[in-house]
Image 1 (cartoon, helix red, strand yellow):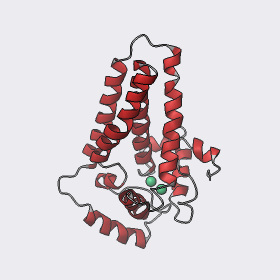
Image 2 (spheres, helix red, strand yellow):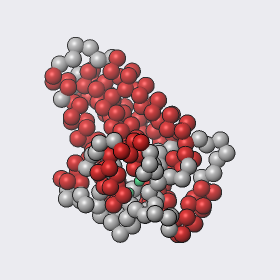
Image 3 (cartoon, rainbow, N blue to C red):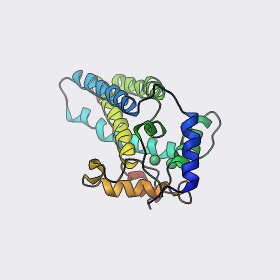
Image 4 (cartoon, rainbow, N blue to C red):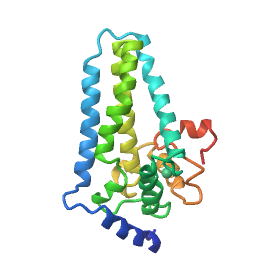
Length: 217
Ligand SMILES: [Zn+2]
Ligand SMILES: [Zn+2]
C-alpha cells in the first residue's frame, strides 16, 4: 500500500525536526538492548537460594508492568497532562502522525528514533522509577524479590521495545513471520487508526489489560 501523501509530508517535517548527523537507529536499539540485558544479567547473578515465594514476584511484576504500560498509554501518552506534555507530543503528535494504520513501517533504520524511547529516558525510568521499587521489594520482602523485580521489569521493558519495533518493520522482514507476531502487529496497527487510537488497544505487548478493561479491538 502506498504511503498516504499527508503521512509522507509529515515524515519529511519530523525527520528534519529530529535530524542528528551522528544518529544511528541500529546503535540506538543496541544501546537499549545492552542496557536492559546487562541489568537483567547483573540482577539475576545476585539471586541466591531461590524459593518459590521469591518467584511469585515475577508474575506480579509482569502484571504490574502490563497495567503501567496500559495506564500510561491510555492516559498521558494520549491525553495532554500537565508536566508530561513531552510524552504526549512524542507519542500522539509525532509517533501517531508518522505511522498510521495505512503506513505502519519505517522506511530506514534512522526512523527507529520515532519508535524507540530516547536513551536518556531509559536511564531516567530505571534510575528513578524501577530501582526504588526494586529496593522496596529487597527490604520489605527479600533480597531475591528485589533482584527478580528489577530483572522482570527490565525484561518487560526490553520486550516492549522489541515488539513495538517489530510492529513498525516492513512486512517482508523475517521476524514478522514468527508465530503470533501477525496477531500482535494487527492489534497495534488498529491502534494506529486515528479514529481508534485514543479508545482501543493500549497494550503494546500482551493485550491483558485491553481484555480486562474491554478496550481490545
Ligand atoms: Zn506504534
Ligand atoms: Zn498510542
